[in-house]
Image 1 (spheres, rainbow, N blue to C red):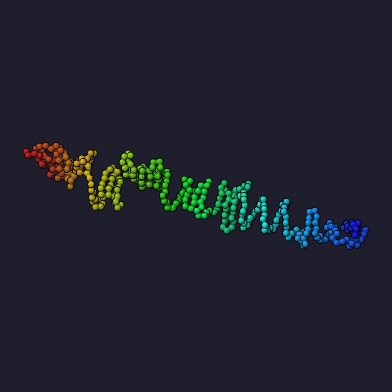
Image 2: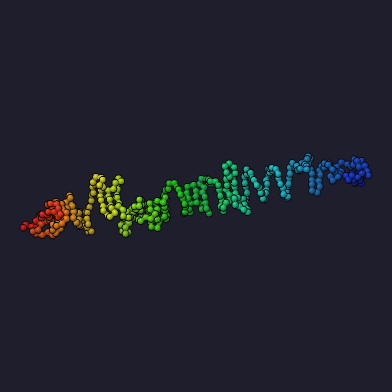
Length: 368
């Protein structure tokens, strides 16, 4: 069949498609066309094998692409580049590697292992961005919030690891870092080897004032190196005039020195001192040394130096230049003569109680 017949057949086919009656017998002409001698442009509804064009090469031996009014169905799609926007209305499975320059998703669910050279970046508004774990009782968070990283959960680091700030360790399992110099601790366990530089307050009861180097117990303003205050009475221990130690009450309060919770020495606010306790058995007082009473410079040659009258076994003994002429006296009281001389007496003794009592001389001096 020559090319003219083919051209005539195609022209007749075109007329038939336009609804015109062809001038020649088309079927007779077509029957004379050799198989596969026509291009795909001349076939309606036929099948083209080994089809190729400037942009298409078809080497399939079975149907791989199906076109319907609703969709195009492809068994396998091998595409190097998609240049237009693509919307997926159903699931998609990628078994190989997917390289995505920008990934934007509303919900992300995956079991993944991440290997990458660059960090994860959040651009634009980052408030509230981070990691959220939803499910169970509430959503767990690790997000950027109020200009800091916020976590709704505890952090648990491995043993022998630590927290650092600016590459300086601040906390590990057992130790605060040496750079931590301030704290607002409210409760600690047992302390060992505590060193405090500066003032300290314990339970608003123990107060150390570093400015005065004074410790107050029950008072915020200690009046000595150590002050213990209770029931508005302050007991102080410290120094006096930088020359001697001092212990006692700061205000006009009596002071008791106790043993067995019983007052053994009582010092009244006016300075009176009582040894022993009227409610207990008499105590024994031993002085291993010399004693002086009302004497500024005791005599080193005597054991007892008294500047004034004494009572011995309830009897008065004192020195005067003459017997008394006033005052109550008891029988047995003795007045020693402060100006003894030959022919005079050593002293006078009261032989009858009264005011001033009856007195008789005794111990004439000399042989006369």
